[in-house]
Length: 364
Image 1: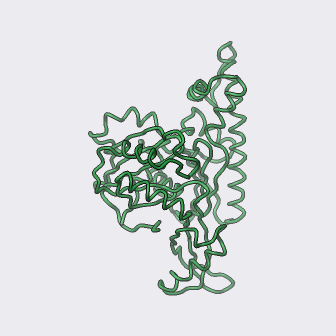
Image 2: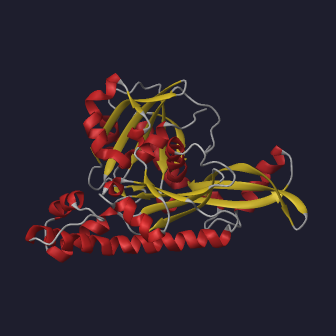
């Protein structure tokens, strides 16, 4: 599996497959200009997915065909493997020729992966020379994914009639979107963190000098906030979802009857977000202990929950770190063909960060 492609296609279709929604974004490159030419979002059919595993192939393949209706079949498609099926590791090896390295990496990876190498597809990227105990070595980054999950996705896209060219990792896709916002984020002296808040989990990663150094899946997502409102106020799920869109985590709500109720709802949500702050702090501290030379100077936030009013400011205060929301629409143009979808895209906002990064993939 090739995770590190080398060339750029002028047009790529990104498809983000989630437990709750399917998102498609097609991006065209014209020189330095990047514009969205197609967008579509559909709910993931109930029962089709369980975590990263596909449980109903015909159902999901049919939904994928509907999602990609009108996409030229020759266009390259990029998607991502997510969740506990992806492993990213760093290690050093003696300096050697490329052919020798290709043989040595899987052998060394065996000692660093939680499952046997024979059960994963992997790719690697040499990161450069380092000195260990006075001996020059080369640092290697390995990206591996469970073969069974990768083969499921490959079969799914074949059945949907799509030209799957890139199997990416969410953290690397998000990094491409972050690059649109910060031209210096790959500088050797910079380290930035990314947090994508999904429905049930948050994908957290740290990129130092533009290189993915650390990734972790945190057990808190947007549904945890909804569940807290449902349980505390005995309200329907849909009402709780709508309530999240009107709360302001850092606003002054006043003291009158209605605003007091909103204030109480905000406090309930804040209690869950405080748990997320704690998980993010632990992850940052773990990274800092391991890579002491570079301190994270910014956190980029994405996912549907990232659009909650005041969330970025609330996290910034709790983490004592600048936080910015990744909304790709602020950096990508919208073509005339996609204008009819502009309002829907604006409503999706930061939930487009992963699929935008996929559509910005480099394709061989």
